Length: 333
Ligand code: 1CP
Image (cartoon, rainbow, N blue to C red):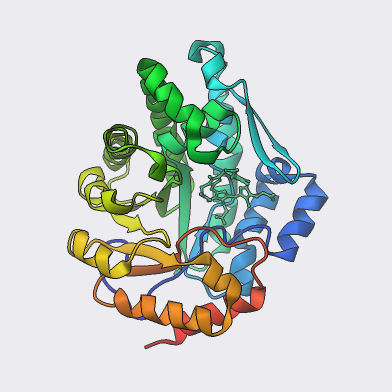
């Protein structure tokens, strides 16, 4: 499918399919102590990876880890504040890169998770690895946490463009090694999450999003020519066409704000697209979800389509709605 053929019904998986909306996830996380304890316990992380597949007939499993493991390997401290989210220190605006001490061994347990998951999956289930794209990861490294409009990172890009380039290049280099490691351990496709690509001015989008993702794609293709790469430039809007043409990704993720009919016209013929049911339609369930899902299936019925959400599953999404969605998508012929 990621190689360009169409399937009816389309294959499906759901972003953030492993996570907080599942009681078995919350129980295991409480038992292990916290999110990072879970990620750094490969048998537990493997269990979390397959939890959604025990409940739902999904076609893809996504490795349970986080995009912020890369800054942690680069040498920032990483922790999660309960009820708030990730924290990274020191902030990149306040140190020189050479002051950080790299810990590449912090990536190793993630590869171990991949090796543990692999034999647990059915042969027809696609095992996806992932990483954050350089710009998105940089926004966290610079602000030290999630931020509104990524203001601190965008400011640094203007105040010290040389430093910004060095940060982005370093993340890109580590990301290629990290994704190669995941592939060598057993994932069959990888997704690049550029969750904050939507906050950039066009010239910066070109350099920070397109150029860096293109570099990662070409390096990965050199090492692993047969592994499909899904690019997900969330919020890219009108810049999606350029992203699709210039990065070399094998498939493109659409967020829920993108009109599939427009995307179908703008994107290169035959390029597989992934997406883009509004996670809030899934949360709402019922007719709202049915209508939206059927329309999406229809609108993308002429090109290779991987059914997914436009962004991650909301924490308060009822499990019954996911069951109904899977039945709806899989039952359609
Ligand atoms: O238990 C918890 O409280 C932790 C919640 C959680 C989970 C389940 C975090 C913290 N990360 C994850 C796993 C995760 N993160 C996965 C694998 C599981 C799956 O998809 O099923 C993936 C692919 C990610 C990717 C990720 N992490 C992104 C990109 C996708 C997106 O949502 O835009 C981003 C931006 C992050 C950073 C991050 N990690 C966690 C949180 C709460 C955040 C967002 C922080 C913020 O911006 O405030």
